[in-house]
Amino acid sequence: MNNVNIKTQKTIVSMCNVQYKKHEKERDLKIAAFIASHTSIRSIDHLSNILKSSYPQSKDFQMHRTKCSNLITNVIAPNMLTNLIEDIGDMEYSMIVDESTDVVTCKYLCLCIKYFSHPQNRIVTKYLGKIEIEHADSNSLHSAVIEYSKDIGLNLSKMIGLGTDGGSNLCGKKHSLFTLLRSENSDLQLVRCVCHALNNAASAAAEEFPASIEFLCREVHNWFNNSSVRRSTYKLTWDTMNKSDESNKNDSQKDLHKFVKLSSTRWLSRFNVVRVILEHYLELILVWLLILKNAIPPRLLCQMLQDNSNFLYLTIIKPILYEVNDVNLAFQRENVDLGLAYDDLKHLIILLARKIMKPSFFNRFKGKYA
Image (cartoon, rainbow, N blue to C red; front, top):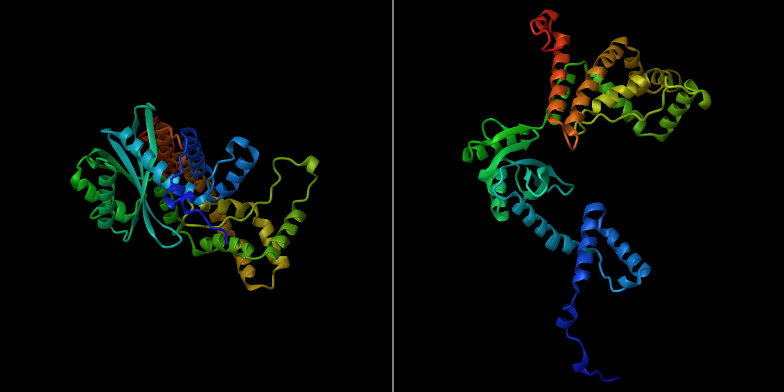
């Protein structure tokens, strides 16, 4: 066995004490920031190999998932948070809060902040942070917000607005996060999410319709979603009924659309569900009446489709849902014109009011509610 000179061997400390030049640090931070903004952290394993093999000046580049994660967590994120708090300074601000549960059933409270930025000379909305919580009751949420604000140096007395989705633990009248924060800051104002409110209003109104409408909207998607054979059979029926020459195709001819799932978590998905069912109404009746007539579920659905009252309900609610959905989308835009959005909301209320109130009521406000 060859003898090894211990004195010439590198120590563990010297091996870990790697010196990076300034431009190498900047390069690593820029790449880590790019990965955090645009793609998954795992992709850095392949990206580093491509950079090393394609560019000779990057042959010493070393970065994989562990290093990239540590740079994002321990270097980039703390500095961005510090810059954000310095940018806010003593300015008044509004906070947007929402709770969520991830796939491992951990509860989180997400915080965003809206304020006027002097360097950018405009109002901006920034991600502030995410707090892990054990319980989602109002007291726990209040304690978490207070503690987190102290840790990052955010002055809660400058908060003038709290935006929520309408949950009782966040904005309830008697005991909620809003009432607890307002007990410490009497100038605090509550701003509920208009998009959530419109969705809740549409869902509540839909409960007044016969149960067959809800059943029809839900089960049409479920019937085709669970079988590729059923979708193929329906597509063949659709192509047969809507066969046309592509060169002579005009705007009045229909296109085949996928059936939309009725979901309570997707804002106003009900409009798209109703729209697609009405576009496919005759084709659905035919495929269930002639081809799948022996199966019990499609027989029941076919009977509902053949009921003219159900068709009438769907026809009536479609334009109303369209108007509500249009206003919802107006408030979801990144740069919302509040004046135009307010006008859209006002016109929606007037549109609905005209359907249930006598025209004589609006005659007293001629010119105001045109």
